[in-house]
Image 1 (cartoon, one colour):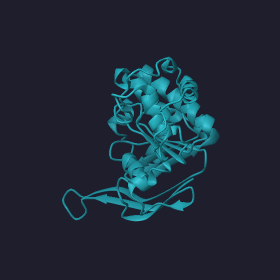
Image 2 (cartoon, rainbow, N blue to C red):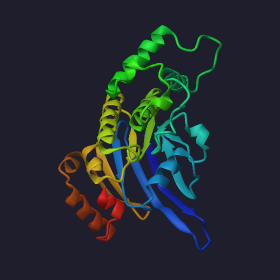
Image 3 (cartoon, rainbow, N blue to C red):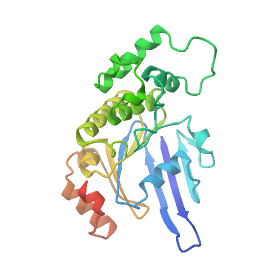
Length: 264
């Protein structure tokens, strides 16, 4: 579903601030795989997601989604293939609109607009049923303004909205990092349920090694713009944090993990 071949990306090339974020990176993800991506600050995690989403053009290499080469497509043209949830819970929803209105916008994404009534009764019942998977009681608050919800509730709603059209690829950019641990756990549980139910091909960035191990079907670790660890199946299920650090040290040639990675 996602094929990245030999991708390179350098910022501020030829200046004193030159920074190579991705170094000849190749990654192939099958349909329905849930891949967690971990690495220290500057490892290339966000650059990878932004390159896939089309936020930044790559210097070299190719990116294909569902067999279609999107390397030269701008961000708005790639949006038809991608659902994305950002770190900031405020970014994915319209605060002054109701929950059902936000969901209606997500449901109508890519469709022609008409002058028919906005939300019919049957559609409202559909939204209510969809919201139950979040286990946050939002199915009983369809007319509540989204701005009145907590950060965790907004992030869970954003996740649901990003997956309503069942995108070919779901990108989760540290989508629980701004939440308290209890709320983050709830959003991660909802993520597992939605991704598993719809078999969504997913890339989830996290700083938390325990979350990277506990969730998803495959784990990759980036270091200096390269994939240095790639584990899946039984190997991933048996993995512990100390073992992951050991793998990182052997693959990167360094025993110094980033402080953020360690403290998470």
